[in-house]
Length: 266
Image (spheres, helix red, strand yellow):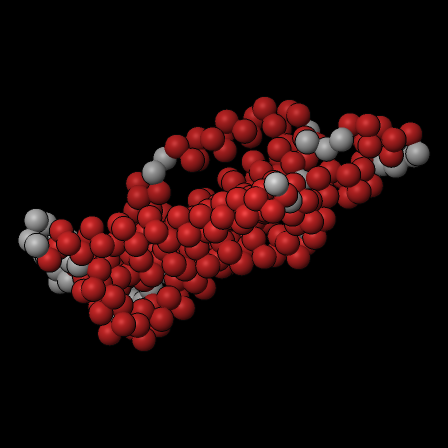
């Protein structure tokens, strides 16, 4: 009986790991069939094989453009994370600021980034400043909201115990609130990391000499849709890799959370 349960559990684990790969494989095969048979014209939807060849042939060029995009995304993400942290701390400590700032935060996320980008160029010029500003606008919100939820999820009994022992607000924050917010912070950081890359690409549509957004604009104007799909998949791969790195950073910073998840799985 025990052996059967173990085999069933292993089989379920294997299925859970293989199922995403199978789903992607089936989708690619269907895509290839539709393109080869002419159901969808190649100029509208190039086949996966054409996209792979375009990616391989332009890989050195894509890497050169990716350096600029990643530099912009990293700088914007760092600034956005710092601003989000400060806003979350202020809103947590001062309820009046929470009531006044929170609606503004929500309002900043209701305006499409494509609509904001031309205005930023008009106000800040064609340099790197409007690009960084757009990335900051798209990345600080998940950080701020995630941290704020983490601060408010702190154990009230532990807070009361520390206060009874004579701890001040800073000590309560450092020993209780901040550690309890780490899981929320990393969840927000994973979202912000992907947003930073997308924000950098969108900002590069407006102008520049290098960057994946600039490359995308050029191949679109030349109707090279195989290269267009190649850069889209490249951006997706970069976003997934960055999210994976954040998850590894979380495991390093929160080893107790990783062991807890393993115990729950077992």
